[in-house]
Image (cartoon, rainbow, N blue to C red; front, top):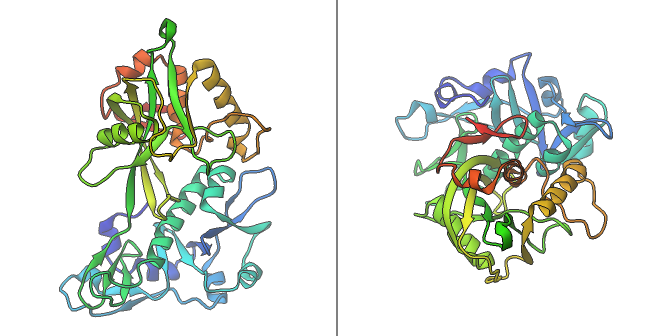
Length: 356
């Protein structure tokens, strides 16, 4: 669990961890994390000890610096790029070091570096969460070394939770971009057949279709973002929208962490028009077609395998779209339509949508 802001403000957490014999260190190198694992098994973070950190010549401590303000919580900053992950673990950016040198110094079997996106498929749930936070935070730190207001140097404070300008005291906070993603459903087909709208970008792997999504703009609700994005991308008008689940997505399209806001949306039209050409294709899928695509996701996407040519499949269980579709398959459109807005549903450890 991420330490509370109150705990981060008391003392020097990173410095304290540096002398903690039980401290675990995640090494982050060029957007990838050090992992261990045999082929065919779920990989894990290759946690290292402080001995390895010292062998690499890294000094993990916090320097006391006067920042010309009265905030006691902003009078120290870390000398290297590091962030707190939990009470006894942290991540260090070692991108400046030679990768082979790092591997020689580290402890563990079958060591390699793997991206956070790859870990979503190949890693355990815990590994994916730790790698995701390390990637989101350390990549943000790397892009915010200087103040956007005055251009002066910024420093990391509160164990990597934010940065502060050394000149004008401007505070910089990590980005989290809200993205609305919707399973759009309709029964306005012959014999009241239930169908859902799925689309694909030309950037996707061949055959993969998913729920439509888009960034929530300034002064826009997530529900209105669904209506706008679905119409812009597919020409489909949407009425009622219910927010049902959220998921952090550390490897966002804009290089920042995204918060995926999962929704169910009822379509008011069915004629598809690809307005902005953002999608390569969009279709209405029947229950049988969706069930087949879901099974293909379980068979291929969940393990990172490549499906045979011509196979239509959904994203794997690491993506919120997978669980929105799964919930629709297990329920009728009428039941989904009656879910109240902000129903408090969430994705639990088993990947099911359940009341929080």
